[in-house]
Amino acid sequence: MVLGDTLLDRDVEGLVNRLCPDSPVPVLDETTSVDRPGGAGLAAVFAAAQGAEVALVTAVADDAGGARLGALLAAAGVQLYALPLAGATPEKIRLRVRGRVLLRHDRGGATGVPGEPSEAVLRLLAAASAVLVSDYGRGVAGQSALRAALAATRAPVVWDPHPRGPAAVPGVHLATPNEPEARELAKTPPGGSRLANASRSAQALRRRWQAGAVAVTLGGDGALLCHAGSTPLVVPAPAAEGDTCGAGDRFAAAATLALARGALVSEAVQEAVAEASAYVAGGGVAAALPAPPVAVAPALVTAGGDLIGTAAAGEVVSRVRAAGGTVVATGGCFDLLHAGHLATLQAARRLGDCLVVCLNSDASVTGLKGSERPVVSQGDRSRLLAALGCVDAVLIFDEPTPHAALSWLRPDIWVKGGDYASGGGDQTLPESEILARWGGHTVVVPYLDGRSTTDMIAAARAGWAAGTATPGGTARETVVRSTAKGAR
Image 1 (cartoon, rainbow, N blue to C red):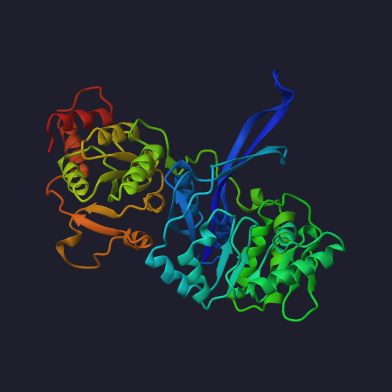
Image 2 (tube, rainbow, N blue to C red; image 1 turned 180 degrees about the vertical axis):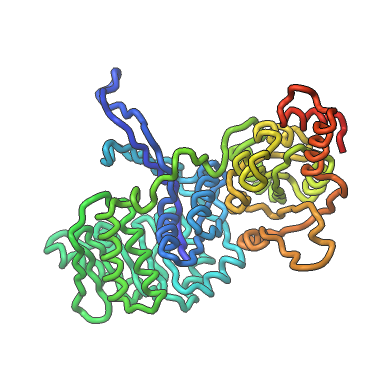
C-alpha cells in the first residue's frame, strides 16, 4: 500500500526562439506535453511497474485534474482508494526546453482537508504486506484515522517525510528524508562535514520518531543509513547523470518492496540506491513512464456542453456531497437511445439526489462491439442523454470499462439495468469491488423486455435488405431513419 498526497504532474516540452515583446522573458512554443501521477501516485506507479499489487490511498478532488489522475492510475494498474478532497487537485507543470527545466508552475491553491477513510481502507491497511507513506505536506499523512491504523499495522512501514507534513508515526521501520529535508526536520545547525551533518540529522529523527532506521538520501552520492548502534552505514551510488525528478519516490518504493520481500533494512537501502541510480541514468521519469502514442485519446473526455464532461460531473457531485445527498451513477454505450435505456435511467435517478451517466466514447464502443458501432457518435449520444430530465451530468470515457471514472466519481450507488437478479450463477457485478473501496453499493433495476439496440440495428438492416431503406443513404443514416419510423 502507498498512502499520501498525489499531484498531477505535467511536462510541457517546447522550443525557445525569441523573447516576449513586452517583457524580457523567453517565449516557449509548446511541442508536446505529457501528464503523469506525481507524489504518492508516482511512487505507486513505480511499485506497480515492478509487478507488485499496489493500492494507493490518497485524496482526490472533484475536478478535471482528479479525473485525469484516476484514469492515469488505472492505466498503470494501481488500485485507487480515494479520500474526498475539498478544493482543487494540486498540479505541478514543468516547462522544459531540450530536456532542461525552464520554469515550474504550481497550482491547486491551499492545502485541502482530506475526508475520512472507508472501512475498506482500514481493513486493507491491516492486511498490507508493506506500507509506504509518501508525504507531500498536503494532509493525507496527518489524517487521524489513518495514523491510528498505521500505528497498529504489523507490516513494515516506510515513511518518506516532508518538512510541511506531520511527524512519522512512532515505530516506523524506515524513514527516507533527503538531505535538505533531514536537516530542516531535525533543525541541524550548520557546520561540520556533509556526512557528519547527515548522520546527526538521521540520529535525531530516529530518536524523535522512535524509528527503526533513518536513511538520508544524498543525491548522486547514495545514502547514509542510521539504525541500531552509533556507526552509520554509507551506501555509495554508481555514477549517474540525468533528470532526478522522481528519484526519491523511486528510492522509497524500491526500499518498501524489498522490505515486503523480507529484506533487512540495510539490504533494502542498498537495493533502493541501486534502483534510484539506474532510474536517473536511464533517463528519469520520461524513460520510466514513456508518453502514450499521440493517437491515443485522453482516458476521460473533457469537452462537452453544460452537463457534459469532467467539469460538469465534478460540479454536480461536489454540490450534492456538500449538501449531504446521495450520488448515483450508471453507465453504458447508449447507442440508439430507446425506452429500455430511459426506464433504467429514470429508476436510477429515483435512488438518489443526482445521476451521472458514464458514457463509452466512440473508441470504447468500437473496441467492445466492432468496427460498425457506434451508430450514433459520442457527441450526439451525450447530448441526447443530457437532455433527459433524469440525467444531471454525462461523463465520457475511453476505456473498455468505467473503472477509472468510478474511482474518481466515487458514487454512493452504481446502477445496472438487466436480468442479473433473475437467478442463477454468480450475480456479483464487476463494479462491486471498486464501489466497496469507499463504502458504495451496486444495485440492479429491472430492464424492459424486448428493447435492444442490437435488435433495432438488425431490424433496420433487414428493412434495408428488403428495399425499404432510403436509397442512397449511408449505413448509419439508414439505421437512424428506420428506427425513427418505429422499427422494432
